[in-house]
Length: 180
Length: 193
Image (cartoon, rainbow over all chains, first blue to last red):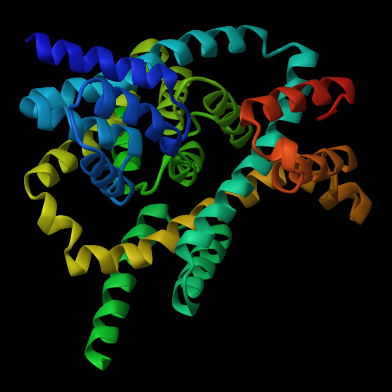
């Protein structure tokens, strides 16, 4: 039981210290999980991270589940995960209440008008990074372009694109394997 | 009943968004349109707050949307919905670790999934830009191209783009600094008026 509690606390601490996306978490995970507590080796952690990136869901959550499961089985996996999301729940809930109390003020609205522009630029930078990793040949470029255009000009659910793209990947790679 | 619906909607987000917190954005946009729980503008504000507070962005956004829709219980339920598919899938994979990573079909599926994910986020970005920087309605009314573009917004975007991409000393700064500076710029130049 003590071990499971420690998992929860450690991952809550990691949750507080993570700012931004899953990638920002890696150095903190290395310190807390590999160096301080020796719950995983460097290689294991990078394996977990790689799998976390290519399975559904949030990378931070996926990695927490992995480490927790390895330490204390299924219960450990669940508690490490609850630990990593716990600080977000508390902090965001408090902030959301405060923001909605002041949102009618003119200067708050102006501030958020500025912030929205910044958000656009930040997402643009993220998208460029993703494209550089994902678009490796003309086929992946076509998948990227088709998804973006269809998603802008139709009301199709993103779920359809995700399923379709996975299918495309499998078909394209199978054809490639057959040709060579 | 809204709690059950929230859980279900976020379960779908958790199951289908692949590759980091921003990948949940297109799904959240669709959710807002389909349910009327929040507008595109509110969503952009939630992204900003989620980027500027501790915790993974995806989890922060789920908590925020959940809170906006159903108070504190909503925040808890939305977050639980988001993480449930991850936990189930990872626990299954943890058992079959090696065979999953080297599976030919898994690799092939991700060859297609990665560009699609980038495409979906690009499309979400287009609609955010339309909301934050263009006056589409005013343009439809007057038909003048000058009315379409919000000049002040465009200048701010250009400055931010240069600072975050090309100016060496500012490029590596934390996003929260750019968000705060933009908030100040918004008030000083009375943006969004």
